[in-house]
Length: 246
Image 1 (cartoon, rainbow, N blue to C red):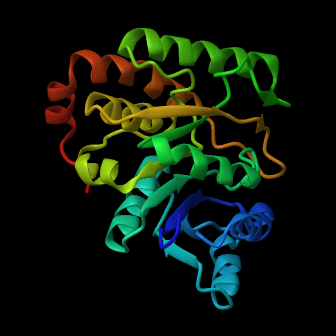
Image 2: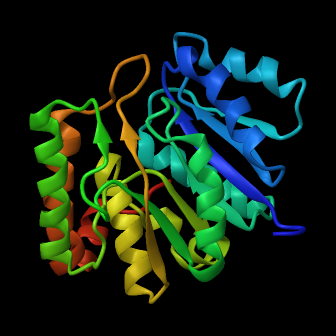
């Protein structure tokens, strides 16, 4: 990985209890890693904490947005930043320690033979800790549902811990990604798969957030249910009705 650059993108909204801890842990894993926090004007001062860290470390970057605009658009903003600044590997990661920073080096190994690496909760059994049984069942069967409808050979298509080679983000029209939440992950995976990129899953243990509140909502679940049909059977019509993401 000599002379390569890796950017870990972390979207945040009210993550002040976690962000000061997780950013240093990410940077400790390997000198290749830099962090970009995309903050949606968190009322709890998340961005101010990042600014303080950023002033003392050139590997930390921050984008502040004017409001709570959603997970998908936050990642799109981060992807565009990564492409403009010549990063080779671009990661998605949560701020709440549900994704273990120590797993990042495993992604670097796997990406040598892949274009997209997904940290999977379900590729080797079920590796989820401290979730209510109802939520676990919903997530597990949602993954089966997505695989059935889309045909993607991915065990965890809604997972949000992943690494892209930059060429995927260069070839996907990021302005035409219309989804948010879980469905954003589905749409990005689907478009990478349809373009023939090599996708690999590696096992991770997903742990319920340490602190703060979940961003999960019924609207996010509903969007994920219907987006698979739009992607599989009505992609052109969906794009026409939705217009372009700005």
